[in-house]
Image (cartoon, rainbow, N blue to C red; front, side, top):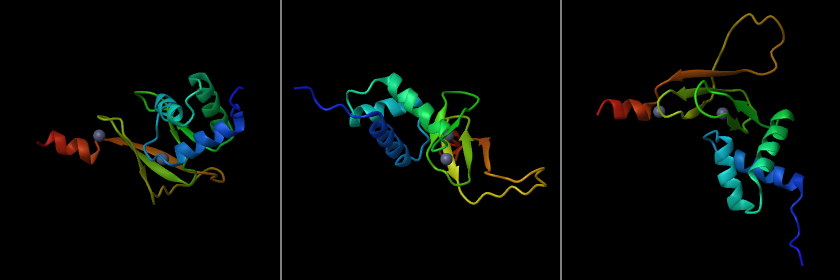
Amino acid sequence: MKATRIRDCERRLILLEMLRNRHDHPSASDCVKDMRKLVPSIGSSTIYRHLGELTDSGLITEYRPSKGPTRFDAKNHDHAHFYCLKCHALIDVENFKIQADWPGSVQSKSCIVKGICDGCEKINNL
Ligand SMILES: [Zn+2]
Ligand SMILES: [Zn+2]
């Protein structure tokens, strides 16, 4: 007898849960690694498709840093990101403020600040 196949919507939900439990903004290949632990039979093209669907539906956000792969974030509230140019860490920053005369009604705010993270600064100063 064949094992019951997990349906698409269940796999999408498992992927979303996995992303919500990670705070380091994984890349698609990180998602493939993690998903294979949970659903060993899943193909990487399926995971890429689900990432696209979750992004299109607004449940997750994708970030394209100037270097390296696209990163995914399941946090939906307004928050900023600090991007480390050395180790490529994308770190959440809460309570950021951008004051401006926006030429319209603001729906959501996001921003990426680039620099060298504290961890890399420490290594630099050794
Ligand atoms: Zn760093
Ligand atoms: Zn984030």
